[in-house]
Amino acid sequence: MAGVLFCVLSLTFLLLRLAPGGPFARERKLPPAIEQQLLAKYHLDGSLWSQYTAYLNDVVHGDLRLSTKYRDRSVRDLLAQSLPLSALLGGAAFLLATSAGVWLGCVAAIRHGSFTDFCAMLLALALISIPTFITGPLLVLLFSLKLGWLPVGGWQSNFSLILPAITLAGPAIASVARLTRTSLLETLQSHFLRTARAKGLSETRVLYSHALKTALLPVVSYLGPLAANLLTGSIVVESIFNLPGTGSFFVNAILNRDVFLLGGVVLVYCVLLVGMNLLVDLAYSWLDPRIRLED
Amino acid sequence: MKSQITLRPGLLRRLFRRPAAVFSFAVLAAIFLCALLLPQILHTDPHLTSPFPFRAPDAAHPFGTDLNGRDLLARTLQGAQISLLVGCTGALVSLVIGTVVGLVSGYAGRRIDSLLMRLVDVLYAVPRLILIILAGFLIDPWLQKMLATFQDGRWVGSSKIAILVLALGCIEWLTMARIVRGQVLSLKTLPFVQAAQALGQSNFKILFRHLLPNLSGVIVVYLTLTIPAVILDESFLSFLGLGVQAPQASWGTLLSDGAMALNPVLSHWWLLVFPAAAMSLTLLSLNFLGDALRDALAE
Image (tube, rainbow over all chains, first blue to last red; front, side, top):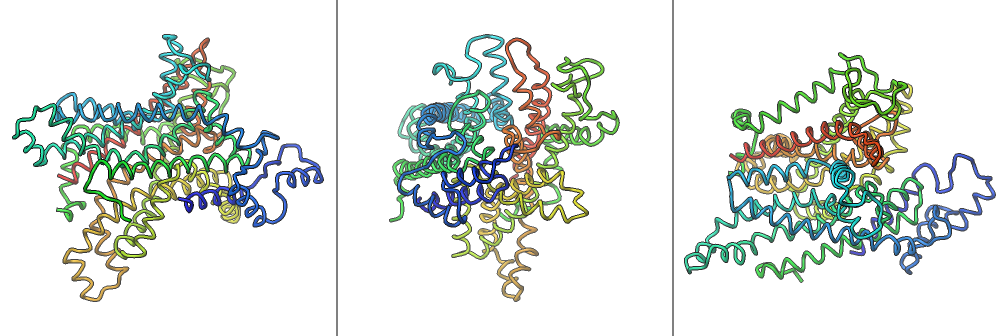
């Protein structure tokens, strides 16, 4: 885990420092003395190696340093301010994606080969194919501008998060639904379900307490990549809906060569993802007693 | 069973027995033809500005005009060219990397295998957008230098697109590598591979002469499914302003302009609807075709 974090952070820092254009490159050139002083203030002078080791040292001691764009504000501040919104958005989308996806997949699998199945899978394919920056504005056009039910963008109340969460969850719902359908279809043919039926359990009971539990295993193992997709998606969705979340900092930090802010955002993302994958592993062995993690 | 997953002669027939596959293939062919031929036939210039900004669709401008009075039809067609170009070449780059990594990993086994697969795991764990952007940074200076010396720097202007293609290709190969590896693992235990080994053929020859042809089916399916993924990622980057740069347009930049022009007072719906329709139709057809191809192979 620490290895992944170290690699990604190093890559981010080195590449952004090697990329053309520094954090203080403006249309109007700064006098060299001032630029030198700025670089010194942000510890960006000296050789690349010394900059890099000093930065890593600071990060290890919990100091994410100052942003070079939003002067005199620490990266920690900026993150603390923007993370609650992004976490709320991501969490809502995560819940929506798993619940709606599993439901849609179940419906399709139970009525396998029917018109309902066809429609559900067509919907899933459409949701995978149509990017969020199309569905987002279209939803705004429909629900905010034409019907006037929900706010257009920005963050006034938590109602503002409804459309972004739906937009963000869209492709994820589709992936979960497709996975659930395939896996449930496979499970429905297995022998232990015949046993369950033979001992007189109702069809509902067979389906929901026996088949679904096994069928959900691949879905659970997909939750890690799902979290990664939602993180990436939230960058775009936050920019569509003008939400002041972490994702907007990510894009701006790259455009502004704001190396420490980018490092902070990337660090948060990686911690979230690695943590998520750990949880998935734990949930997996809990769901299926046959799988035990190696010591 | 497993060895059946190759390009057998009956594949096309089985594929085109499916109405969905025929339909999506026709749509794709139409889109490709439009993107290539329509600009020549209509003599439209995507960069030509006119004094009529935000004009609703009419006879002169079937898709309307944008902020600078440019014809949206011409811009959408140019966007199609660039998006399809980036999608296809990016997918090809990822195909090469993914196949080679998968082949080597599956065939070599042991330490090389676990090393390569750990690398894939790590890359999977990081948000793709971050990786693509970082890969872009890595390639940028190197490519600029190469293009400047190549044919008197004639191609420097399109360096941004080349960077996109390479960066996307360098990141999108993960799934391909995993799938190819899985196939190789089951193929290499089959008698024909052991026979080739017993006859003393080199590993290189076994990999590319004996294993690769048997993988063609899987590779074609995942190539069809990678193209939409690459187009999608390209448009995400362009939407965020990190991809194709103005005045060139891809579907992503057009949609970003369209989303920006949405406001409650004057709705310039055509700026959003036409590029969105073109892009969704393309991606949907590609995904449909890929799924149908996979089913036809498994039949």
